[in-house]
Length: 84
Image (cartoon, rainbow, N blue to C red; front, side):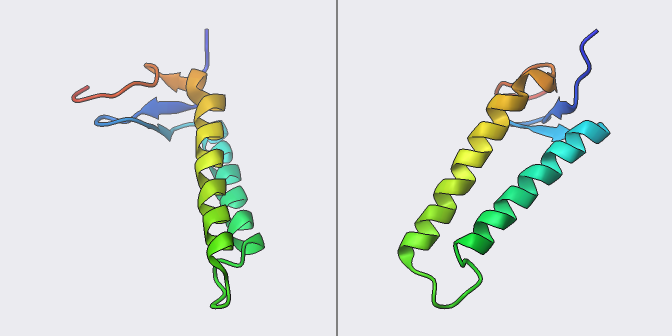
């Protein structure tokens, strides 16, 4: 029996954690995004457009990687939903 870490969203595309493994994976993603924000000086007034672009690119890449790694851990599969 396959153990799922995430449930699919009721509407739209995506998933939410409902086991401790899913919450840990989500927390790791959040930490990586915050680390990227820190290394790209997002909270500094003197940051450049290049650093802002790099941060946005990091968030997109991390989000895609997170989705690709955990799509098999989503109960009901990962697809667009109008109604459940």
